[in-house]
Length: 214
Image (cartoon, rainbow, N blue to C red; front, side):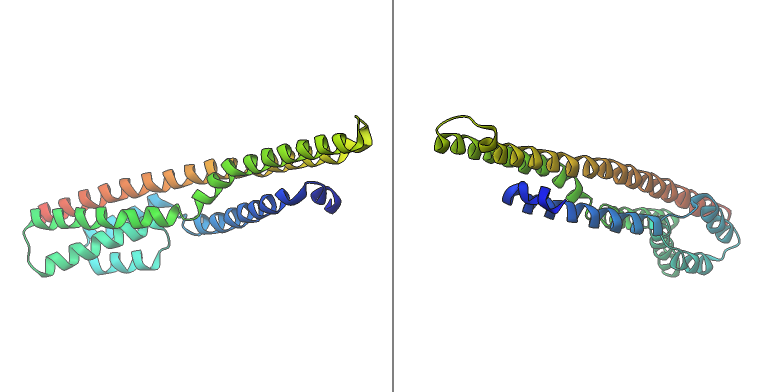
């Protein structure tokens, strides 16, 4: 294995660096997104039940004690709601303020979910380019060897061809899993974003209903 890597020449250095970044991002994002995953349905029902009973503070505590972006966005909305109620604001003002608080905070949540994912698509794009660059230098070395040897001989061109093939293969083998991982994590983030939007809507409806019946 090590001999094969050395055969690829110095272009294997950035390729190996890319592979390290891919593995690190995959492991980090897998752990982070797994930690952020909760069963959204029961959580929202618990929050709505607390609000129906008038226990806003308990609902806020539950959000603070629950991991994940859904709990974060609902917690932000409830804290703003509690603050505006203490200030005796009108219902319309409260609803507008809660919506704005969640809208302002949601980009920070999404940015945290998308953290480091851009590295995967970057590597997926540049790894084949490093591989192709190694292919070009390998072919150049082969032609230089032919010129110096004064003719075509398999043993003369073998080194350059090996360099070309190894770097090309390495670039593709790094790019493919990076692209697959990028698509996978992007789909996970989109699911989180959908849950965030639905949860924010449910919260506004629950608060509106509470204000109507109050």
